[in-house]
Length: 172
Image (cartoon, rainbow, N blue to C red; front, side, top):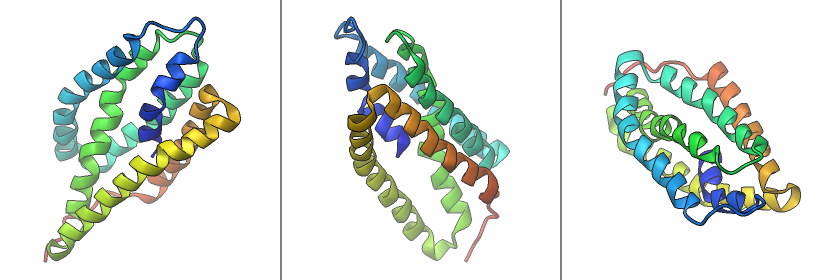
């Protein structure tokens, strides 16, 4: 949810700077994140197969709150371009590894159901996250919204580190 909220509000964030950055900055920021995302999608799958599902998730979950908090600290829009490069790691792992985790964690007969529930949860996050983040931004400001997103993500990170263990392949 925090990842979707961050991207959905990036244009409002960029125009909050004075002076307003050039119009081309937003598409370039998204081109950087998408361009880096492509090779990281391959790397995320490889890493999950080599080191297990949990380690890549832990790395991405540890980086994401730092990335979100960094947006709130910027005094210029230009470092956003560098921060967008970290999108490759966070998004790619979160787009690939949870599906492998579900595949490993569910019996064959429930695998499609598990994948569907994960996909539905992602769709809900895609819809609700930006809406909730926009409400927070309206209360505290767009830059401080990123601190709230970082805090929410940090809670999720702690839960992941404490509760999530490497799945054992379940068949049947």
